[in-house]
Length: 343
Image (cartoon, rainbow, N blue to C red; front, side, top):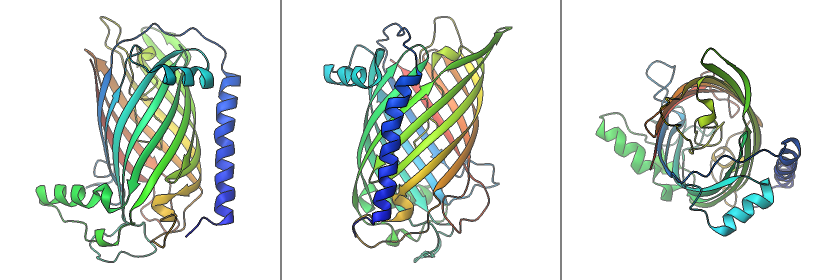
């Protein structure tokens, strides 16, 4: 089923927001010196799950699982074309590239039904590979990313979720036979995060990380504005912890100055304006399950990170407003645990 005129109009709005992000972020950021070259590459493994939540026993519904494996290069391992692209779009800075594989699983509130409630979130799985170009200056991180993947049975959501549940002797999701059908996925993302020092006294630091993000493609069309506040030591080591997008994400690259143990606690808020979400709006080209999506989504998050001996370990707790009409249970929340190691 082809996109409706209203959906195309909404997508046009998001594309306009993407263009505005690219133009505005360059205009409001003064030219700053680039950090020194950093040859270290970073490997990251990340898991997000609604079983790790402030709801006793977890929720086991909606966005129920996210898994990601990522690699980010050092600044000495960047193809000339990627470096030229970063400079043309963002200006001067040091450049890295990254590659990651990400799987996300979405389920309705009741997973005991073979034919889930048509007014509840559709069963869906997504598997994508992302190539990104990152550019840093001393006060900002900019990202351009392209994701290619698939939504549907080929994303292996049933095998991963039910296989794990069988392993831990938990009940399986019986609704996978009704999941969204296979559909190719293409997504383009642009993002910029600024680092603004606020206080530095008594060995402690406080900073703010405002950010702008825009994504467009067959997966999700949205614009996002976020603000993160951090308190700790060695805050210049990174731009905040990583999240599986959408959401506030500082990326995987970080540094650890010799002899120091950077750490911080953080809290933040973000808001998204959404023109399309494939996991709620359903398949773009054929009939499938779908629900009435909410166009505005708010998030709150809080957590902690510690960087030690070339590793960064972080935990984030996220609370979300309802993403579709009829969603139950108040604020939906999930936990995110991330481990990154430099080589």
